[in-house]
Length: 253
Image 1 (tube, rainbow, N blue to C red):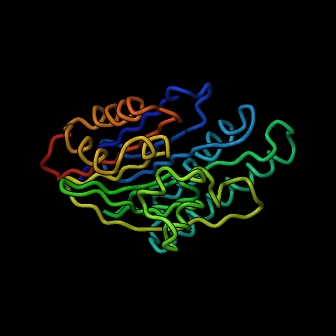
Image 2 (cartoon, rainbow, N blue to C red):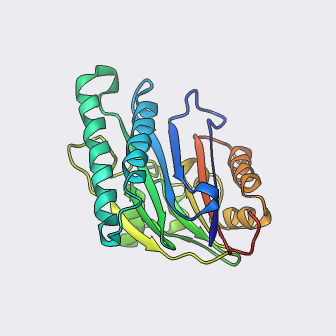
């Protein structure tokens, strides 16, 4: 199996600064082995931009150096270690720089190796799997509204417009320690793993995301169309999308 990878970020229509970041490492010559990290920062001044860029860089560089480790069972440990290191570094920075005090970032990470995708997340940036017929959210948001949905207090539809929808309950860098959640998915040819910040999914419905991803054979065109759709529906936040499309060996990428 081969893989096509594309990532783009956009400031949106109402923000003065893009506090989203992403890093893609590996995937040489279309081979399905590499790292993708997406982060959505928060904090005063440019602190959110600093937190997201630093987290994405530290996690990606740490993990790409461990891709050739033969022990697959250590993958989750390696991902947790990389996230812990980024968390400690950003927390340290926030304590020693007044302008960066309280900064933090969401993180969603995809590690692709040996035909499987290992995913880790903190905060409300998401990973989906998109097939020809459906879209499914893999990650679970660490947010106030997600807790309300899980408890049955509100419906997923009500969550989209809830006044507390942007309050997250976990972030990288805001506390001395943080726990990530881990998931695993085994893709087949034709499927796409889509990672995104809330600037996409709060502006574009899951059904619209699925339709756009499946409309375009060219992955970059699909990613551009997703960002255009988010901006067309208001673009109230920064928008970042990283897409990993898995292809059968006979397909030309």
